[in-house]
Length: 282
Image (spheres, rainbow, N blue to C red):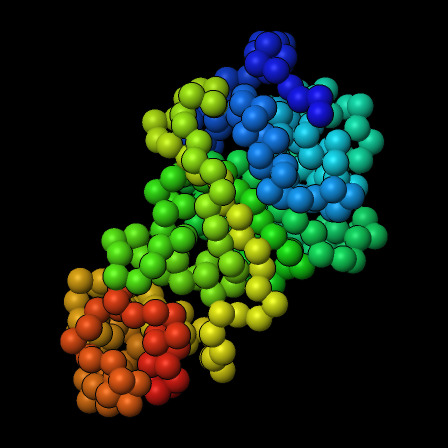
């Protein structure tokens, strides 16, 4: 596989006067071993893939050599000329200058005659990680898997287990929709410029159906938000003081029916236990 080297990256940055923008979380990946690892995990040979935030195109080049079609969505107009030069020899790459948080991914694919499921790959800026992941999962796009390089601490929250410090609303939102695993740890030294934190590569495989069966998904996540909004308080206190209008009597009764102590905290419950509780609170 022919990939970009550091010299080419630095040449393009100099040629197009590119200075990574801290406010946009721009850190360009320069380690080809990690790039190949991401591509292997994405498993997009002959498939369609969307890359969010391609930057100058170090990962895009690798994806272009194995995928059927690569849609590269880049917000920063300043990077587009360098990205075009990087992927110019690959006719299966299309660059779109848009904000991924406002893109209808299914519509983009359909406009190009792509009706089947597709994958999403990204080296996500840290400031946008949670919003973009939840947007992609909650919008119901025809995505089969997502491979993201993100801040290590955020990755830990996504794979966390109950009764741990990293377990929270993000954990449950991600695990409700996907089977998630951490596939690599990434040091700051593989980026230009070096971030101040370690990173990780996570793989999210979309479930054929959600992890738990509930009639009112919206209410389930309202309960989760309320419980983790005051995570050190008991279920009885956190839920009764939430905007949901639940009485202490109703919460106590629902907890007892669900075989859950109202003195427990939300962080101690599995998603299935929370789902049971939500059913009896509805």
